[in-house]
Image 1: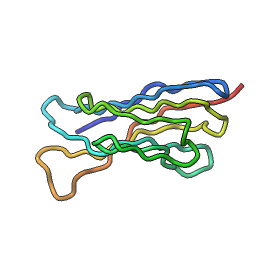
Image 2: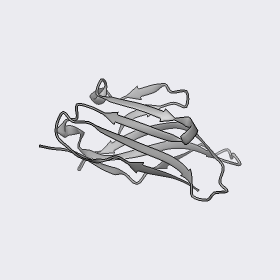
Image 3: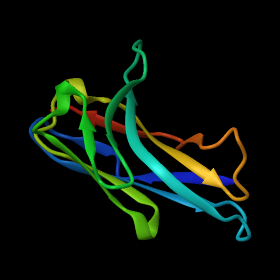
Image 4: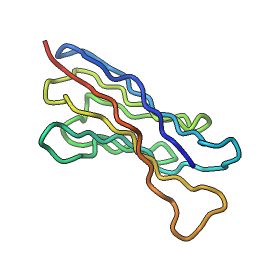
Length: 127
C-alpha cells in the first residue's frame, strides 16, 4: 500500500560525503497515509542490520554512537521524505543502507503503525 524509495548511494573515497534520500508514497493513488518516525539502518556483509539514525515526526533525532558528529538526519514532512547527510565517511561505513518508516494507513486499525522498509541502497567507502 505504501512504498519507500531510496536514492543517493554510491562509491566515495574516505573523507568524502554522500546524501541519501527516501520518499514514502502510496502504491495506489487512493491510499491515504501518515508517516510517524523515520530512520536509516545499515547492514554490512556478515553483520546484523543496525540503526544508524532515526528522527521523530517533530524532528527530534537520534544517532548511533559510531556516526555522531558525522551524519545528520532530517526530514520534510510535507513530502514524506527523510534524508541522511553523511560526511567524513570511513571504510567501516560501507554497507547497504535501508530506509525505515512507521506508517499509519487510513483507516487506522489497532495493529498500526506498521514498519515499512525501502529496498536498500549500497554505500561503498574505498580509495
